[in-house]
Length: 276
Image (cartoon, rainbow, N blue to C red; front, side, top):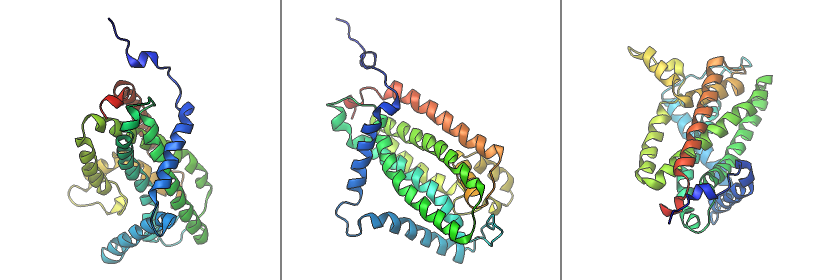
C-alpha cells in the first residue's frame, strides 16, 4: 500500500493567511513575558536602559571610545550612538534565541495539530518586535530633543522591512534545525557572542587598526549584521541616506536568508511533530 507524502495533501497557503495564528503566538509570548513580575512592562525599559548604562560606563568613561558627531553637527554622545546599534542587535539576538525556544515549546501542539513551522517563530519575533518598537520610540524622542532630525528618517521603514525579513528568516532556519539536532541551540549561543563583537555595535569601525586593520575592517564589513547596524546609524544618527554598498548588503542578506528559510521550511519544516 503506497503512502501519500503529507506535504502533497496539505494545501499551500501564503504566509499572510496564517497571520491570526502568528498573532496568537505573539500575544501569548507578550502575556507570559512579564507575568508575575513586580515591574511588569517596565522591565522592557529597565533592561535595555541598564545595558546601555553598563556599556556606556565601560566604553565611554573607562575605554574612552569617541563616537562620531551627530548629523546635525552637534558633538556625538556615546550613549545615543550605542543605543542605535543595540536596538537592532537586541531584536536580532532575542528573536533568534526566543524562536528556538518557542519552536520547542510548540512541539506538543505540533504533534496534535498541523501548522506551518514558521508560525511560532514569527509569533515570538512579533513579541520581541513590540519591545524593539518601544526602544525605537525612546530613541526617536531623544533625537527630537537633540534636534537631530532629517528626511533620512523616511527611509527607516524600508530598512525595517529588510530587518524583519532577514531576522525572521534566520530565526526560522535555526529553530527548525534545532528540532533535528539540539546542539544547534548551543552553537547559536556561541555564535551570537562572537557576532556581537564582530559587529561594530560598541565601537566604530574607524577604531579598528593595527597591522591587520585593513583586512579586519574588510572582514567586519562583509558581516551582514554590520550592514544593518551602520545603515541604521546613517539614517537615524548621521542623517545620511547611506550608500549603495550598505543598501545592497541589507537587501542581499534579506533575500538570501529568505530563500534559505523557504528551502528549509519546505524540506525540513513538514511534520516536525514527529521529531519534536
